[in-house]
Length: 80
Length: 423
Image (cartoon, rainbow over all chains, first blue to last red; front, top):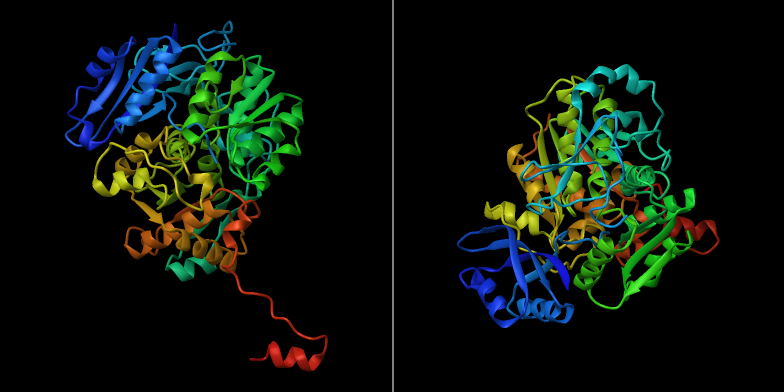
């Protein structure tokens, strides 16, 4: 089992969608939301996700395909 | 030490009480960790200000070394500094000529283009991060960077014989890494985009017993930026300015300059200045904080950077929310500069003050100009703009932007004909 700690940012068109439900239904991963702030037109969520590495990778790819920005919990680490 | 492991009483009997979550306030020992295990909020150093107040005075500072370590009481180290002993105490320039152009009578520039040893403000944060990392027992340091941070980490690691790993995107221009390779770190070119580099580094930061300066050492690393505020106040004759203009990349620099002034005021080193406005500067091609500011929101939307100001090109800034908060709280503003405006800002700074800044300096000057034009900064305001890196690092940005030399034959008549200096 591997754990990822992620920061997700939702664009306006995805804010009302049940994304967490979708990933739990479609992938064998355990999602634990630690912090979130969702408004009418944007939002973010910080969560940990446990599962086998290939399943976690597929989940991340799925989220990105849906237009959600997926970053590590530290967000941008690469600096100038 | 992997994530979560601790060393025994790493701050016993010192001014550091520990680490504190900025969101939920939970306390942790002063070890190598950066995220609250409960709410995932960022951790910040928690100081014993009462103890510090008993030792810190203007006199004690003035008797200290001519470096950022004269403020060691407010930096997160427990012993004597061991890395970056000459960082900081850069000039505060009274910019009369630039001020005249912008309509400012009291403009000052904090000139970190001459910071030691790698000519950017990163020498401050790295000096603090690596001194703390050694106190915590690390022998290996790492970072992910396309420029200034890599330079500074590599140079400082070499100076004390620490092992050093630098992660870069595989397609980074060769010229960018030469300045690192000279210090002989292990440079790892990651095949993938910026997002892939970020994720890999996050995973490595959690797996290897390294001091990753802007991951597990980040709470200490970020504190080094406070020295810019401390020096500014001291160099202004123990005053807090009315306006500061700070470039925003991760947002950490802006929040820590604010914090530095607050700490000095709280400890009675300077009189508080409630009029202080903290202003931000971003490149328009990477301006998530600016966009949130102009829309009046506190949600940042990550962007894909597309700007010549590479040192500010952070699309998903870790402290973006907190920098926005400081700007709103201090009634400041944020401006953004296009690429041509950045180059014009670099040229204006060089032509008026003789300071050759990297593109981030162009962003700061161009944004300062906009803030003046918008009437957000007044003629008589005591204003300080932060110039954070040297222009020799971003020469490519000036390609085609400067006049060609005047070519003449080796004769006086040719000189008179083509140059004609009396006219």
